[in-house]
Amino acid sequence: MSDTIESLRRKMSSAGDLQSVVRTMKALAASNIGQYERSVRALADYYRTVELGLSAWFRENRMAPSMTERNVPNQADAVGAVVFGSDQGLVGRFNDVVADHAIKTLDALSGKAQVWAVGERVHARLADAGLSPIGLLAGPNSVQGITSFVAQILIESEVRQVNGAHTSLFVVHNRPLSGALYEPVSQRLLPLDAQWQHDLARVRWPTGNLPEIVSGGTRTASALVHEYLFISLFRACAESLASENASRLAAMERADKSISELLAQLHGTFQQLRQTGIDEELFDVISGFEALVRPGQPQRRMDGEEGQIQGLSDGGRRRERAPEPEKRHSV
Image (cartoon, rainbow, N blue to C red; front, side, top):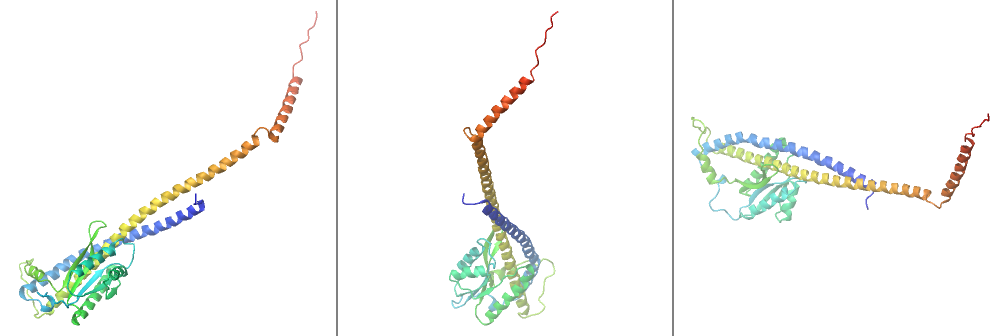
């Protein structure tokens, strides 16, 4: 065998250390999934409030032309997009899936794509596919960091809209499904869809007291749209992080299973090699013993002579100890 007992021990020790790291990453991924999913559920009530405010506005007013879609899009307009990926590896095909979906979505649109990549991994995938991002953003590592991260994206988007760099904004990310599954989705945030506005205007108010917009102008509408964009980006970021950790959890489970199988194989080889060494040592002891007791060797003849001498000595002693014949007396 090419492996020795010492090399197998080193391999088993390294595999055991690696398995400890993998199981730690599994525990972290499982805990992170819970906090990101809870943050998404917590947005539901706030999103409902903003949706009702937009519904009340759309019933009484029309949205500003800069925020609504145009019937005839300009071919020269640039398309802004935010693609959520990951900065870290060990996530399976997480970045490949979202990058492929982003490329297909943007190829179907008119205008030049201006993409912000969230995460170094997806940035590299997009660049390899020929879709060079204009910016690289580092994704947040916790729920507390999502708020400032989304605010940064909104500031960048507003600056480009003011400068006329792009008139539309899309977001592409992975959305978690049951278990460790996820699917890539895309959503257009700007301009606001006309059908979406029409559907919101027809939403029934939950109480009998009809709402009234107190302040006129577009300030209220701009504030509501800003909150709508914030919630949409926050939810996309949280769902992407939950999907990333779910993909990492699945990858770590596969790695843990592979390491367990490797350890079982190494233990089997180690036991077999150790048993082979023990058998060889036993065979050497037995062979040496047989060489000592084999007939025709000097030690064997000496034992025979000593045996004969011992036998003669025992026979002499037996004769010396023989009882004397009984004497007969004549009357």
